[in-house]
Image (tube, rainbow, N blue to C red):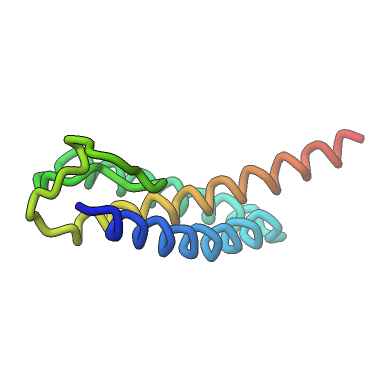
Length: 116
């Protein structure tokens, strides 16, 4: 995998993270407890799915790409393998992280406001 591929994954992943953070934000503000916990469950499910797919990978690519990495690392060496699995794992991880982080942020702010 080269620098251009990892940069593309990071840029698209940032967009996915923002979109799914909005899902987590509005899900945490839902009036129904079932919706609130359902949104959290979906976010955690996305993270678990990314982890499960990363644990059984055989494509020679890193598990996920969160930030641009530069330099000659053995982990990022060009393996001539398909990077479709890397894209899928990275997008699932970004989506799950966006939902869970936004949900936690809104929930903790609401708890702090209720205690005042």
